Length: 301
DNA sequence: AAGCGCCGCAACCGCCATCTG
DNA sequence: GCAGATGGCGGTTGCGGCGCT
Image 1: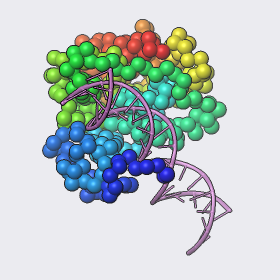
Image 2: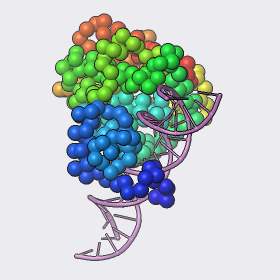
Image 3: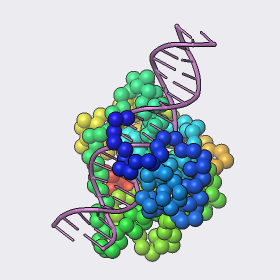
Image 4: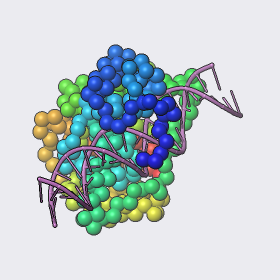
């Protein structure tokens, strides 16, 4: 590659992971939890750098990871989220339970980019979108790394919430992702993070729009990233034209659908994409959460 | 069957934010 | 306030598989 190895230490293995290495890593993390990636390889008996271990775990070994077979609905959502968020793959991945940022990034670069281009659309990478401000330093001071873990745990907690409510039907995805070392959701409730940016909650969504409507909407302006102004962006975002609700997914998606419908906010174009929960208050809280998410983004943009 | 080129994906790298001492 | 450690993210690379000639 011509680059220097990420780890100064020589003698570390690189390249594809063997099943034995996977097993070692999985076993270690199951026993000791995530974290301490630097020291993890040594403790786990792996000749890998910590970063490599983390990547392998996050993208492949973590429970609940879905591999391949990205559905049209997921694809549609990716396109739409990319229109909204740009190349913030981790955020996009957060909306797709079981999908990793790496996978989505690859899928975008290999499939969707071509698809969009072949459709006469030139989706710009939205690099010129103003980056959302990073999460401010913790106000408590001592929050520290815990807060970052909390940030992650919020997602996990949300996933858990969903899975608890719908019986963990998310294909082992969002609900299945349970960072062993993350704080309990209880703790999240007691110590809500004071982050400015709400991490998107991985949810399973139905496609609110036809394929063409997504691509069309992209073509019609979402990709016009040169503007980049907040209002413009907002207009672009809400310029998606909703179509009639598609039938809810079968099986694992039976509990997810689309709420709203452009009555209030047009997050992701015309309707909230929300888990259809059984508890009405949960619905409203999620609506509020998404409102916050979207409002935050509008402000940031 | 062999050679070649393309494509997809796993993995790596650099950079940045944050925490800790 | 500073430096080192750690974790996370996005961009990029390179290998292997596959199809075409």
